[in-house]
Image (cartoon, rainbow, N blue to C red; front, side):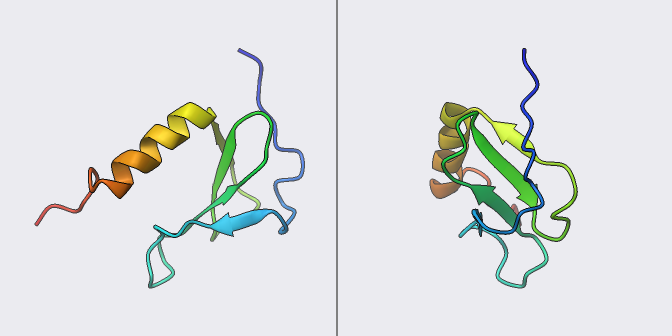
Length: 75
């Protein structure tokens, strides 16, 4: 499997905070749209840290489960 590299991961433009990130600002991820190799995801607190790149279909399935409440916190 070829390595997926986001050579401009530190660039601030193009990243957006996920609408499902915590409102208190502590648990935030950022995603980048229109990346040809997939969907890059990073921790907004560490923009210079690692970036995970998910296949678009896998990311879409994950978002669907989140929207449907599949990862709701347990009491």
